[in-house]
Image (cartoon, rainbow, N blue to C red; front, side, top):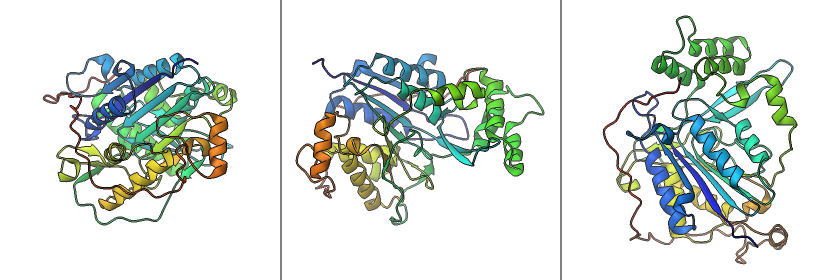
Length: 384
């Protein structure tokens, strides 16, 4: 049997010098890199790291083009049994699809540093290329990320659980399409007078027009053909939709919050050991450093518990097949063994699948962290 290879793409977007600026996204991916290298056996050479840190070279920035190229390379190199991981920390957005003859539909997207959206259709096309038996986990610390993988079953979804008032400063990791377009208009200057897309989108909403077409027109003005499949001609979209249909066992998504919530970007405080972080990523790393051998379902439950105890009203969700829900985080499991485990109601370690785990104190890690220094902020050079 060939050796299982583990590959990852880690993306952190702080959007410096824009009104969309966040604080904790680069710290998130640095912490995640340390975790997967030290605890999950990833070779650092197989971890692609894209951040909009000042001084980053153009090829290292988390633009749409660079993110998609890194994901394509990871997927194309994967063989059956390999473990792939995509962690995104940054803004998410949602918009309405109101095409003639079709029912109302909410579309989700993540927002790269150049604001050229990556949508669920882009990720669907990637997953269609996976070899059978390849594990692909997406962890999105952003708003509106619950629909990023088609066909996935909702294992842990919306809840009415509430926390206490948030004790620290935070900012939402969700932005409107209008804000994105307005920011593109002001930063790039690529949209000429009379073509303010933010106003165009607002008008489209008010009259029930095709919002996707308006967004696509604005992005195409700036990025030409380098835009999401969602905004390309319909024949290209149909080709993706008619390609190999996804099954519920392909892809696994851990999202930072419910569809009707926002993901918090926390300012440095005693809660986060003095560093700014996304609440979801910080909780994931904290829990995985304290409790070993968690399944994906157990991990999300423990993260929810941790966030509630800290007074953060944010409820991460899990979307996957039953088998993948009960597989250990960033691990693979033989399909036949997995089905037997589900039938018995236990996971690989003979632990009841729905057992409630307790976090017993905090373990002080002595490992040397992977250090990434930050300098003075500079403007992002957006693509034209």
